[in-house]
Amino acid sequence: MSEDDGHAISYKVLRRGTPVRSADGVQLGTVRRVHEITREHLFDGIDVDTPDGLRFVDAPEVARIAERAVTTTFPASEAGQHLQTRESALARRMKQGKTVRRAKRLGDSLRERWDRR
Image (cartoon, rainbow, N blue to C red; front, side, top):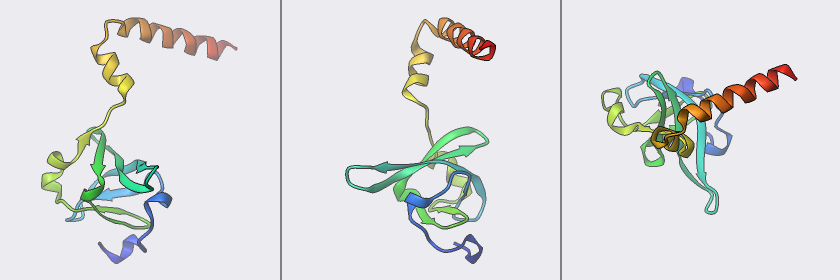
């Protein structure tokens, strides 16, 4: 919560690429996407790009959202316990399915067709 983070802002105007820092000031990653419960207009959490991949920070674990940084409630030493793995439903199905190779081939052929057009 340093002064160089700027003024506090709404989650609705939080920009992609904003640094996400732990309570002790260590950068954990950058904002990829903000989640909202649209029916109730409530902040739900943030997807964070980390060196270990895409992770999710739940709303109660976000202490402050400012113009130039997001600060969490936990220190960097506890980040592994609080940052949840976030993958799409399609990614989960692809890991479980038997047709992964077919899907990859289809994607490759579609990409080749797109490039040839």
